[in-house]
Every structure is written in C-alpha cells, then in structure tokens.
Image: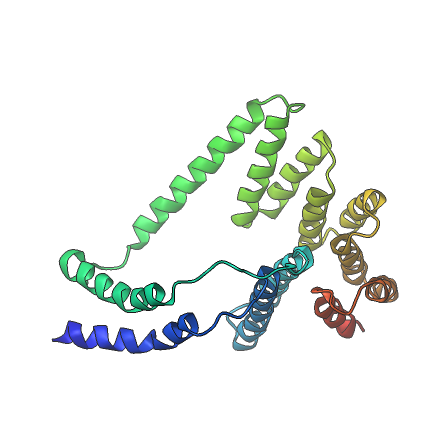
Amino acid sequence: MIWLLLGGVAALALAPLAWALLRPARLRGRSEADLALYRAQLVELDRELETGRLDAAQHQAARLEVQRRILAAPAEDAAGDKSARTPALLGALVFLLPAAAIGLYMTRGTPDMPAAPFAARQEQMAAEDRMLEMLRARVAMLDPATDTARQGQILLGNAERSRGRLAEAAAAYRAALDSRFEVELAGDLAELEIERGEVEAAAALIARALGSAPREPRLRFLAGLAEARAGRADNARRTWQALLAEAGPEAPWRPVVERQLQALP
C-alpha cells in the first residue's frame, strides 16, 4: 500500500511537468534557455556564499566559470525548436516513468544498503589519481611537436583543473599553446592564471590573443578582469565601458560586465 501512496505522490509532483508538456509549445532558442540557467547559477552561488557553504575564493572561482560560459554563449537561435511534439505520448510518460521506477525498485532495490564507506571513497580517489598519473606519463612520452601531444596536454590540463591542481593545469595548457597558439585556449589559460592570482601572466596572454581577435568579448572581459585584480580599477573600468559601448543591448553577457563595473571601487 505504501508503494501505491508513493506512486500517487510522484504523479502529483509531476503534474506541473505534464501541463508544461501538454500545453502549446512556446518557441525558445537554446541560447535563451542556457542564459537563464547561467543566471540562476549566479544567484545560487551568491546564496551559497551568504550561507557560508562557499568561501570567498571558491565563490569567485565559480562565478568566473559561469561568467565564462555566458560570454562564450552563442547568439540566439534564429528559429526556435520546430520539432513536432506528441503530447499524448509525453503525458503518458510523465505518469508511466514513476510507476516503472517504483516497480523496478521493488524488485531490484536495496533500501538497507549503507552509504559508501570512507575507505571506499578513498580507494576511488586513489584509482582516479593513478589514472591521472598514467595520463601524465603517456603525454610525457609523446613528441611535443605532434598534434596528439597537444591534445593530450589539453586533456591533462582539464583533468588537473578538475582536481583543483591549478598550477599543473596551467603548465599543461601552456605546453599546448607552445605547440600551437589558439585564441580560445589562450583565454582558458588566462582565466586560470587570473584564478591563481597570476594577473600579469594572464594580461600577457590576453594581449597576444587580442592581437588575433581584437573584438572577442570574452578576451576583452578577461582583460578588464586582470586589470581589476591587479588593482588598476580605472583601467578595468575603461576596458569594460568600451566593451559595453560597442555591444548591442541584447548582448547576453552585458549583465555580467555591468555587475563587474558596479563592483569596482
């Protein structure tokens, strides 16, 4: 009887989703949806800082990553999603999926299973470390002049960054750039250097990248950010004001730049 009750609660919880699926579709480009998600993430990060679940450094690093995604977001789709929907099928799935999930859990579930012990989590982390060490060793064996080695360095940099090893990630990105300079990767490394507090190294990278892409919004935003982190608020203000002056009112990253401007002393 308890399972029927739980199924009914799940169906009621999913009723708003059913209405969203069955009502007439509203055209919405992917870019608009992405930007809405990123802005919600910024609000959530501020809430995490206020409640003490993030410290100032973690909050700043996370905001920088979300802002990078906003700046890299593509322009709004010219045409929305025009794929046909099948409301009856979607509506049925809303109610059938919880029922199927409950049935599967009743036959295969193990509610009494304890959480993974600390030792098991340690073992998993050790396995990930071994894989990362193997990746480092394999990349080191490759000819640095080859594109395979370059891609390996980028992959290694991404892995190191995900583990919070920022210095090692920066070294891998720089090795890839030494093989072949690329504007987007230079922006990634500059962003990482700003995160590490190496603002002068970041400024040099940004200046070189701007030589190839002088109107790239992300690079210009990072240029202002490097100036702000170096204590040169007036330079940052001029950089961001020029960026906003040349951008249209619909630029998706405009609110990010405006907030940074407001935060300057």
